[in-house]
Image (tube, rainbow, N blue to C red):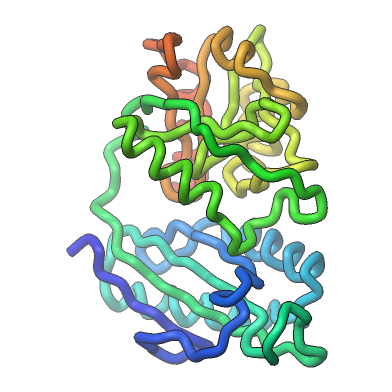
Amino acid sequence: MAGDTVIWVDGERASALPLPDRGLEFGDGLFETLLVRGAVPLFTQLHLARMQHGCRVLAFPPCDETLGEQLHRAAAYIGTRQWPFSALRITLTRGSGPRGYAPPREARPRIVISATRLGEASPGMAAPAMLCLANIRWPTQPALAGLKHLNRLEQVMAAREYRLAGADEAVMLDQQGRVVSVVAGNLFLSLDGRLLTAALDQCGIAGTRRDLVMRRWAPALGLEVVEGTLTLEQLEAADEAFFCNSLIGLRPVARFQQRSWTSHPVCEALYQQYQGDLS
């Protein structure tokens, strides 16, 4: 049933994380969440490329081949369970090390993979979401901007906020009050015939579905995508808004504060492009 989870640590089935581990102690690591259909992880190369970029930024030893092998083995196991869809998370930490912040000179990264069964295939795009505004904001750190590293406390706190507010998601701002994203996804606005999304040079996560919207799906529809500064005023003036992540694909926005949207033609057209890539 949905919720079944299997975990591997360095390629072996496990129920506990070996300690010490710098991922747990300092958030010293990266992660990726892949949607798996049957036994096939989707858009794998985009996920692995982002993780490899993160490894270079964090000065992790190369582990591309090992990551690929363990991902392949996990996907094959999922196939034996006959799960129609599952979420596969790859967590890469710097592994064990001596006490203190300084990383070990000869780090041995640890790979933790978990696979969780999801529900049956969705008949279509998710229902439009209700958004609130998160009080907590993204921290500014250009050196880590775009990475999917393990330090996600701001998003944990923002997720708690939107649950308490009875919303489906929350808009997160940067320290200057500019729109960056939702808690678990990249935000796009359709305004004046163009798609607008936040530049991620100071904070935020460069999502794989964001990349696909910008480089593949929007161009296929003749839509111009502009990265830059987003404001709350632009969000409230948008013709429509939607967000995207690896598990939902794309989801339209129904309401944000006093603004509501009942029609989502751009998101629907992009969702058809997404579905086409899945077939």
